[in-house]
Length: 213
Image 1 (cartoon, rainbow, N blue to C red):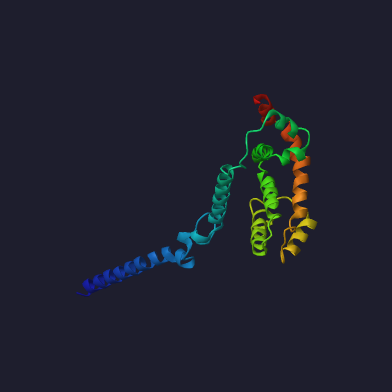
Image 2 (image 1 turned 90 degrees about the horizontal axis):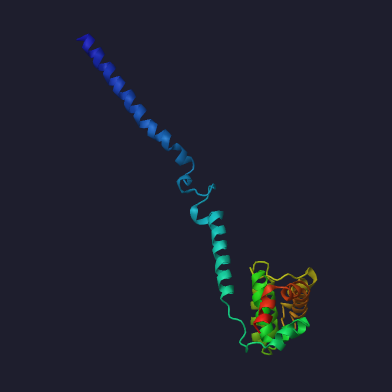
């Protein structure tokens, strides 16, 4: 009887030890998740939640830029009659003659689009329209729109301006008027004239247009 009781006690102790070991093992396995409760939701090599990680923010930026590119490619140009041979030849005489002709601006704008600098023409056109505005409330509203679209460093259509012109615009935006963007418009006009216009004159697009007419 004594030996049987000893055997039973040994079996009970063995069962208790196995139960204790079996109960603690899962807890130890789950411990990493307890130490970092968001670990199962971590993504893109960071320890933040999926909804706010930088990868998703970058993806959103890419989507916004992609949608912007699509909008710009489908933006309509100015309504104007088809240019004549004399018109196209005049464009080659001076940049002023090109910019004074709606058909010339359209053709040049399409060329700028291939160089990913169409925002220069868009900004210049926006300034031309803005300078004709006389209503004070409309001036303030359009000034904010132009600033957000072409001056702000956060805009994908930001134009290249020097610090002096930018500082002047920032000051004038407190009380904008129809001349707020005059210096900036002139600077972008000069940039297109010196940089893009010579390349357009030598481009296959311009030569094909001449040959077609």
